[in-house]
Structures are given as structure tokens and as C-alpha cells.
Length: 421
Image 1 (cartoon, rainbow, N blue to C red):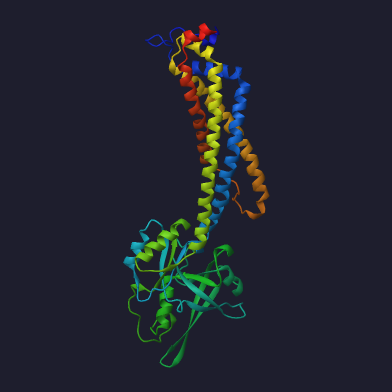
Image 2: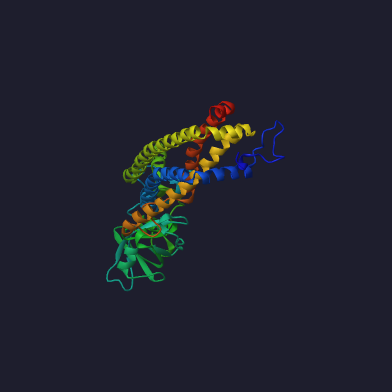
């Protein structure tokens, strides 16, 4: 009998069976694996051939759809909810605090009537004034793109507005206002400064971000009230303001837009959203995951069948070896553990080979689509956590047939097997 099958002195349990020592188990398993290395290599190739295409498909789902979702999440317009019409409804500080407590809410700020927010901007080097849409802003506004909010007498311009006015950050501007009061036209000019310019991909049209207090003052002045900073004319100071007719709102992610719109609808507030385009992207993700699940089911089923057949053949072929192990006092735990160790080693080898094939396939696909991808984007992408999950699943589908094969091996009758041979 092979010396590797003989238990060492002092390694027996009280009932006379050898204790299951990991070092000895690994030594015995590694020698057996080396003896049948070509068969183990074939099993690893079977696993790799099954897993590599599945991982590439999984990477496509993570990469293509993940990139689409990331792009839409980076675009504030995709996450914006625009009130359709407030009618007689007004939004006060209590309502805003209530909405800001919602977990799917990223940013909300009250604002003035749209007609009051349209102003003309003058720049020294601009050939003509530019009409822009003023939007209230504050800390955390997605449109700011990381820029600090402007001070009381400053604006953050969109890229298009800055280009057409020929200004950069730090340059002075004037806001020109007109109103009709008591059958005569009145004018006001408000000096402001350009606090910053939004990137081209983070802004739309000719618009400017301004503090809410500035928009409130402009609306009050156009309603006929006296605003000291705009001049002494008017019908008295404006009353204290605690409500607004409109708001500007953004969800945390595109997945939150639908639920957030539904919550607002339940409160009687209709909104316009990009929900149709969002639903198209999320529907594509759902369909790809369904296809991936079906392919994974077929792949895993085929791998389990192949590995189970291999275990059946191994048990039948090694009945004499199993009988000798039982005669030398190795109990059921040893006979079950040995094929499991084989299975784990084979799974790791097959997983590593599948990972190499996946990496080559992903590199080729990403290179082909490189011109359509931005910095940090990929058509095929799996993270470290995804790879760890894939390897864990590979070990699991390898160990399950091994457990069954080990149980069958432990049922071998040693005396009958040796007598027949």
C-alpha cells in the first residue's frame, strides 16, 4: 500500500479513525491530483469553456447598461422633475423640509414665476444684450457641477451664455429690468459679477444660476414694490415672503424619478420627467438580466451535469483506492473531503483560466468600441466584487457534485471490493 495512505502515529481519533488533519488531507489530495493531472486539467477546461462566455455576457450587462445608467445619472436633466402647473398651490418652508426628508430626494429649491425670471444681461464687450433664464440655486445644486453657489450679487453662467456675452469668471455684468407702473415704464440696472461658468456638458441653453434672494427681489420689483438696491421708486416694500409658486427638483438617481413623481402626484402635484427614456434604459437592463439568468441557468446546469458524470466515473474507477482508505481507518469525512479538495483546486484553476479568456475578450470588445466610450467607461466591465462572486459560484458548482461523489465513495464496502479484485 502507498505510504501516503498510511495514517501517522498519534493522528487517530478516540474511536481509532484518523483525525481529519488539513495538512495531511492536502498532501494526499495534491499527490492524487498530480497523478491525475491531465484529467484535472480537462475538468478545469470544461469549467473555463462554460464560464468564460457567461462572464463576457455578464460584463456586457455591467458595462453597456451600466455606462448608460451612469451617463444618465450624471446628467441633471435626466433626474429633474419639473412641476407641470402649481395652479393655486404654493410651497412653503414646511413643505420643502418635508420633501427634503425623502430618501430619494437629491435637491429641491423654490423659485419664482417663469416670466419674472427672464432678464436681459449686458456685458461691456457684447454687441447686444442677451436674454437669459435665471434659476435659483444653492449648495448641492446638481447644475453647479461642483462649483460653489454664487454670492448675493453674482451669477454662474451656462457655457452658451458666457460664450455669447464674451465673458469669463470675474467679469462684471448688468441685469437690465423693465416694468410698467402707473402707466409709465420704469427701468433698473443691477450690477453683478460672473462667479463661474458651467461646463458645456453640464448646462443647457442661455441660462444663469443666481441666489434665490435675487430672484425674489426681481419678482417683487416687477410686481411694483420698492427694492432699495434697484432704486427708490415703487408702491412700498414687498411683504415678507414665505411661499413660492414653483420649485426645481432632482432625484438622487434615475431609478428614483418614477417613485418620486408618484409621491408628488399623490400630493396633487403633477410633474414632467424623462421617465420614458429612463424606462427604456432600465427595461434594457431588465431584459439583459433575464437573458443572462437564462444563459447562466443553462450553463450551470451543463457544468453540473458534466462534473457529476466525471465524479461517477471517478468513483467507479477508484473503488479499490477508496476501499484501501477505509481499511486503513480513513472514515467518511476523509472520503468526502478528498474529492471536495480536488473540486476546489479544479474550480480555482478553471476560474483562473476563464478569467484570462474573459480579460482577452473584454479587451478586444472595449478596443472595438473605444471611440464611443468616454474616460473611465467600458463596454465590458466586471468589478472585483463581481469576479469574487463568479469564483465563489464556480467553487460551489464544483463542490456540490464532489460532495455527492464523496458520499458514494464512502458507501463502498471495502471487504467486498478487495475480494472481487
